[in-house]
Length: 497
Image (cartoon, rainbow, N blue to C red; front, side):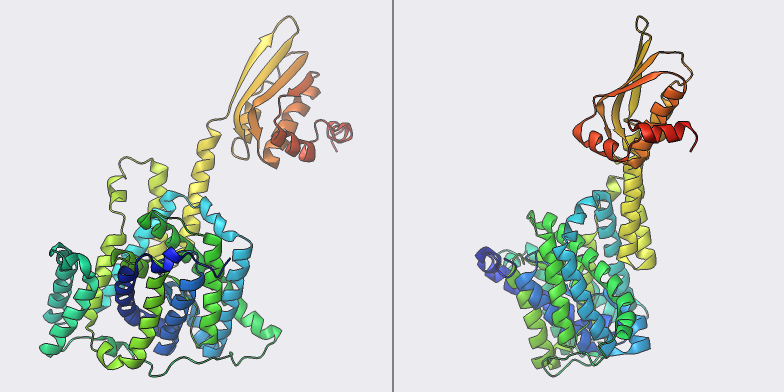
């Protein structure tokens, strides 16, 4: 059932999930505010969305321990809609985005992740690590030396604190970093950028809001061009993040359930005045690195986020951005697949091209969907080219019966069809030609057309042609689309019609 989760997901790691959830909640605040600013809406829109999406996916998402909230990738797609039509149409687009994602879940589109190769996932991870680091640069440019000192100190705490006996393994170092740097900034009255400078924090709980837009076809025409890419990008980032968390935790997740969960979460966000969101690889990595594993960590992150911004805003606003920058730099370093650089010399050139192309496109466009699309497209082309090389045709001649037998080995499809056709000698004077397909497989209409072409050409030369050894799948596609064994169709071809 969609709404049922195993007891282990909730109570199997209570202390680790609670502490990790607290760290994630603190790190979510400035990001949610920043993404709201990118989209051109009030900070509370991003904060309410992050709370709502995290809490809902904690219960019904397909990946325990993964953090979903308002994200930069989604915010970038909302800019024009907000600018041209306002917040109410954004809320309506968020609701439609959720509906589309639920439909995707029931259509089992989450299973399409099996078509995403390892090199594409690696490129996606590396690109996000670069984007996460680049997003911190504005906080490190044209600032005083205090900011650099605080950031360096924060990184030192994050990486060295775990080596302290007992307590180092008890408390997550990112949380210690945030608390310590905040105390130092307050005690020394440092004039540095804080969370409060990012925007005004909300002082009320979210309320139910139905978008104030007319329920007409015109409204649908306005929001659908935004909801479709929002749904696609949201699912892509969520499913890719789920795959990465699967590997980090050595567990499996339900990708189709995640599609439905993300959809319901976005509907909830839209009804509470929030914008659309999806899974966040950075926050998910923070959660895992801080000891979070179960659904409780996601619930705590969303709940603490709302409690802190509404009831503890006076304290939260004093957190120095330098401390959060240190945490995000840690995430960037931990997310990047450093082994992929070492493997450049060992992996095939095609694999390296796919990985690097994915990185370049994502970083250049800041659009995850484009990068994944390019990566999958290149990986498919390289795979098709590689498989086509394994198709060979051998032949032998029986002089007694004046029969030439062609044995086909391998996969015949659009990329190997021309090679298949070129392997036959149509000018050879033989009485009979046997095409043996016992060790071959025909995949598509192009391959069937190539077989028809070979048979027809030999018959035009006066040879008797026999095709033998087709497996069940090949027989099915040849019977459906082939013409060489259909006299009326062959007659048309031979007459030139």
